Image (cartoon, rainbow, N blue to C red; front, top):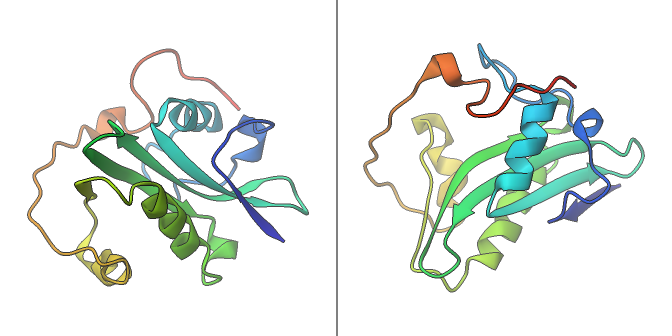
Length: 142
C-alpha cells in the first residue's frame, strides 16, 4: 500500500535509493534527504511494505503569493500507478490560495501538467550541470 506524507519524520537517506535516473551527476541519497528537509513544501509517497520512499515532489514557496515546483519523481517500478498525479494533486491542494504556482518541464511532460489546469508559459533557466549532484555543504554518502 502507498501512503502519502508531508513530513520526513522517520525517513533517512537509506529510504531514498534509486531516484534521479538518467542524471549524469545525481544527488546522493544524503543530499536528496537535505533537499527534502530544506524544501518549503514536500509530499512523499511511501511504500508501507518496504518503508521506502517511491515518489516525491518538492516546492519552494513564500507561502503567501507564489510557489515553484522543481522536482517530481517516481521510481521506475512504481510508474503508471497514479503516484505522480497524486503527489502533484496533494501539493497543489496546499497551494490553492496562492496567486502563482510555476514549474518548468520538458515539452513531452506538458500534457501531464495540463490535467491540473496548468498552462504553457515561457521560462528562462540556468543549468550548472557540474553542480547537478548538489551545491553547498559537504556531499553526504548514503
